[in-house]
Length: 126
Image 1 (tube, helix red, strand yellow):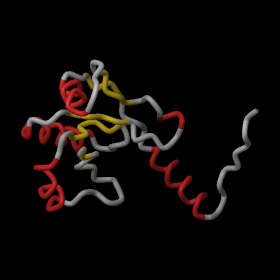
Image 2 (cartoon, rainbow, N blue to C red):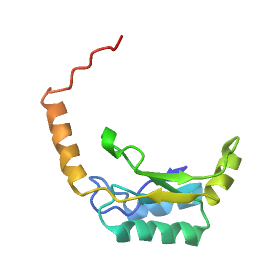
Image 3 (cartoon, rainbow, N blue to C red):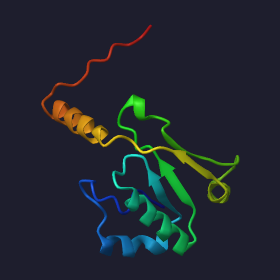
């Protein structure tokens, strides 16, 4: 089980401390860098927790738009199966950059458009 952005103060529904404590013993991975996390110290706090627990560290862009894809990832050795994945992740190197705080504004506007029924129309490509 992975714990994504555990200390992000800007998320709509952050994981409360009590819930976080209940799941700690079940974790395999903690996300220590999320490019959409606004405050760097929130990612740093996640890294300290992973280090304290001796858990592999993950990262992600949490992309909500095409231009965010690939902004954050983990370079790691090849693996086969879940256990090898965790070992490869331990050897991995986090690559990424923080997104502009404006991505949250764009995401909020996109959700509003969706709720208002202003969904994009897709056409099949031949």
